[in-house]
Length: 276
Image (cartoon, rainbow, N blue to C red; front, side):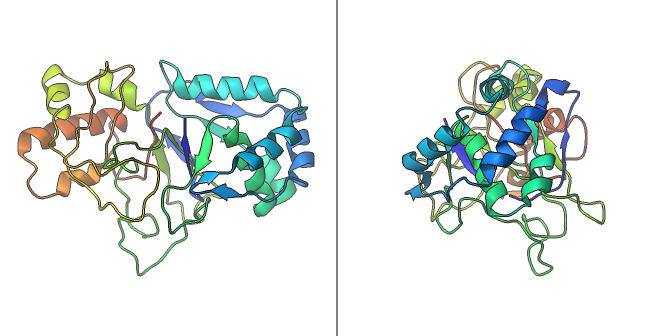
């Protein structure tokens, strides 16, 4: 799901981010969400967005939940602050109480609707897209069994989502599938001046552009960095662009420099991070 404003393995922060990025819900809030989650109605969509009527219903149900406002405020500060850029909200106790079916998804959706408006830009997918495993899929794609290069979604759109949400249900029984989460703005701020200059040029290409809603127009070639300062600008990055034909070595080297900062020096062979 995206938000304007999917099952996966447990995420691993790329660099030494503080514990502020890990949010444990207060016990009394968990109890309230479990109680209200059992009666939250099914959601409706208006186009690709969560319907305003659903948002109103969810907010009315959660209005009296203790410490909700404080928790959401902390989550928003973590996502939009000078450091962080991502957050991990632990919902395990709620999942154990409600199961991981529709009622649990409604609780997760209600929480997200307090941060921004959830939407699904891919027309062919439901609001929450389940990511399974297919032995027949490209190993480098989300359902494949190989590594999925470090990336952000919709880098080739002029209006990509403000946030991307991964709903992690269980660890991989065979030990695979970790996701790296990274503060993209902090990584960009560590770039060398020549690298930053190259990444601000429209020299990169990746991905197709079809069956999409509410993400603007196709943006290709695109710049990885926009013209805003490093601590406020938007970052588009996918390691998969490094294999695209026509990319010269200077721009590829600059992208590898950013990849190193994004992944904390780890090989950029894990699945996607988010940007705010």
